[in-house]
Every structure is written in structure tokens, then in C-alpha cells.
Length: 324
RNA sequence: CGCGGGGUGGAGCAGUCUGGCAGCUCAGCUGGCUCAUAACCAGCAGGUCGCGGGUUCAAAUCCCGCCCCCGCAA
Image 1 (cartoon, rainbow, N blue to C red):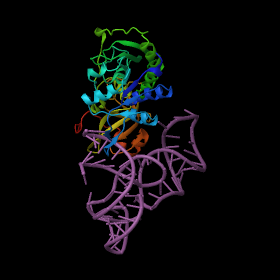
Image 2 (spheres, rainbow, N blue to C red):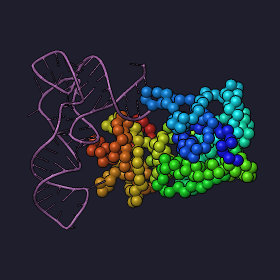
Image 3 (cartoon, rainbow, N blue to C red):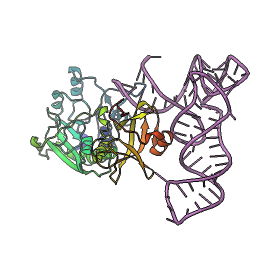
Image 4 (tube, protein in one colour):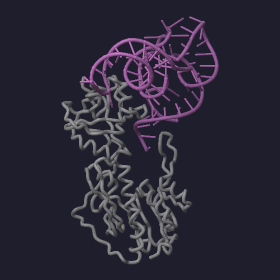
């Protein structure tokens, strides 16, 4: 069905969703209305900040609606728009089932994994943490469950060993853009037979908390590295550092894995051939960029210039729990 | 009034509590040494100590006001 004849609503909030919306606008797909989460307080000043989707919608002069909840009024408002189809991408809240049946063609969802793998809120991060080499995007029809709907189309994406969250997200968003328009056209023309997911192979992802970024040095270097890749954008990986008796949080912005197994015990900082390395259960971790609490992001060399006592300290997972 | 750390040569920091010559590591420059190094030796240059006011014989340091950066919280 030609897109021009469809009443399309786009629902989304995050950066990932904004990439799709931007593409749809670029391709002149008529979006009747954009629904995004209300502006939330953010940052140190707690300023109410518009979502990436809202910013994109504004610059494309689209109609924007922001609902605090989905009660009768809100549903009626959506119904009044007479949508033929709603495209949902990373909206961030679970939609009430009543919305799903409002549009003639239902709600379709863009999900950043190859369902039924990685259902839930953090598919990209979970794929990276698992060290997966393949991920992808799924376009599906939404039903009552979370990411359980029938599949319209999927596209695979390769993940390279040094990919981190931002560029994997970018790849997957691009894959989504590659298929979204033709999928909608074919689906609304009745040319796609939705395929059921096999629930026996389904896996689930968790909402990520800031504290998930804490590094456990007593684990394999590969696991720490994968965590760093997954959380590169948010919440980042961090450890605690005894700065002359004061425990401080140290974010490690950029790391690599050393090639030679070191004798250092987990969390032990050492300098070898001028390179700072931190012991793990296996290979050493080499920090390259760090941010100390209260300070700016800097390269490890600069950090050592100011705090030479960092070498020989033992990093830990808790505040105030340092040996000696 | 949410909590906390900070602004000192180009980079990262100490010095501030207890006022008294501007200090450390790195980078830079000059020369030297070495088969060689993110190595070593000798020397040089580079600073309105965030901004404004106050106290004082004397302020990076004490007092008042302001600006900016960052970690937490949300």
C-alpha cells in the first residue's frame, strides 16, 4: 500500500528511535503525529530536557504529543487521529493493550535484536556483553507480551570484536532503516505472512542500572572488556581508587586488553614498559582514558603525572574497603 | 536553596588548614650520551595562581561577591 495513503503515527523516545524517525522524514514518509515521553529533568541542574525523538520531530516540524499516562482521554486522542498504523521504537514504557488494536494495521515495533533473542529493554548491550558476533533488528507486530509478537522481517548485523555500543547501535539503526519502508508497504498490502516466535529459544534482557558499570577485577579480562563495550555510552565502567586515604570513583573511558599475562593479582595496578596495566583473573586490562570523580576526562599518562601513587594501588569494588 | 570535588606555566597535580622567594611529574626547546628505548645526563624557556572587591608591611593561601568545569543524586 502506498505510504501516502496511510495515517502513520510514530512512537519513540530514545536516540535509537530518533535515528529511524530521522530516516523516515528524510524519505518523505508522511508521519501524521509523533508521540514521545514527556520532557524529563536531566543533568546536574535538573533541567527538563526533550527526548531525542522530540528534537528530531521538532526540526522536521512534525506534530508532537507527549502523554504522562495512557488513560481514556489519551486513548481517545490517539483514536481521533484515526491511525492506520503505529510505528513503535524504544518508547521506554509498556503500552496498554488497548492501543494495539486502535490502528487498522496494528502497532509494529522495531527491536534491536534477532528475536526471540534478547527480548526486553537492553538488547544491544546484552549482545555486546555476551560477546556476540551477530545481532540484528526485528520488525514485528506488537501483542500483549513484551517483544513476543509475530515477526514481519529481520535483518542481521555483524558485530566486530572492538565495536562498542554507539557504533553497534548505529549499525542496527541503519539496518532498520534499510527494511522499514518496504516492510510497511508489503505488510499493509497483505504480502507478508507474520511468523510466530519460537518461545523455547527466547532470552530476556534487564534494564541497566548505573551500578552495573562497576568492574569486578576478579573476573576474566574478556568479560570486563565486553562490559566496557556494552556500557561505553552509558553508564560506563568504573572502579574505586584509594586516593591518599579518600576513596574515589574512577571511570575508565577507554580500555584495551593486554597481550601478555601479568603476575598482578586482580585489581593490582602496575607499570610495565611504561604502560599502565591492571591485573584481572586472566590478561591485564590497559586503561587509556580515565575520569576521576570531580575531575575531567584525561589520558592515562596525564592522570599518572598528577597522581603517581595510582601505580601500585589495588582497585576494588567497594568504597572504603582497601587493604592496609 | 539537593550532596560533594575542583579552576595554579602547554597537560596532569602539590602548595591553601598554620599568610612570608611559584613547586613536582610530563610535554617543549638547546646540547650531550646510546646499537637501541614511552631510556639516561646537563641546561633553557614558559605562570594575570578563574574573575572582582576587601583585610594585611605582605595573599595562590584569610574574608565577601561572581563565573566556569566535574562526580553523585534524579
